[in-house]
Length: 406
Image (cartoon, rainbow, N blue to C red; front, top):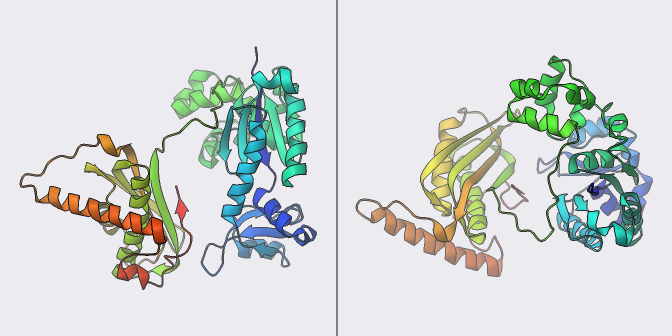
């Protein structure tokens, strides 16, 4: 029996939530964007009127305003978007427990076992579109198919507020003419390589021999072959299935460029505190630290190293990250963003540390561990800014602004 998989995608999600808060925004070209003053000046979402001007997600606000001088920019309300997302997923859960959020505004649903109760895939999709619109005030587009890859292509095929059904009988006529970069896993560089090989559409990929794709793209070639030919059989995970984080990290785009050594040390210390706190909250330690540096010309580099012992101690994360940063930076070049990410995570309880010869390092580790736990408790009770180092508290590089979490 063929599966019935839905991919539900909220249309212009952030912008739609903002229009619910202020209906007058529906009458003007509007976009949700970061603060130009705090240098988060990119378009996060746009409404239908803004789309008509060619406004695109991720372009800078100044580029968008060149296209549409009267564009209304609204600051984001991320906590509210999360609440809306949770309410929408609650509606999905009334039809199946196999609901897998793909992002804050997208979810996969396996409704194979729900068809006797609620009808076929199209009927369920149309029901969900009506309910989400009537109860939440948001429109969604839904793709219904026999696997996750084609379901996602279906939700993108027609927008807004539409259902597209892709079956084993019609998928070649719908999917194969689409540009190859519409297929999941085909990014910009992969698409460029495909075009060099004369491969422009998803149908072109499907027509390739599997070993040809594997020769040119390795394991990714196998995936391309499976996806394009409709052979994907990845299951939809239950909403309640716990997924373990593969990495934990934070980044900060600073309110001004980092130009001095003190700036870099302060910024690194602040990010390491956040990463360490999140790791301790999840009771994990990491044995690989990776840093990212974005300069004021937007050039980005990353470096990583493997640690002798896994850790979630903020000071150890800071020291190792700072070592990488200082060995990697172009001296004198202003820094716009720093990131720290810890990976190769293991449960804190099962982590074993290599003992030092004289025991001093072990004593230092224990002291730092107790200090971090004490600081975590204070921040949990009084807020994340309740206690910090003097350099962080007095810094003017924007450390109290919102940071990005990985």
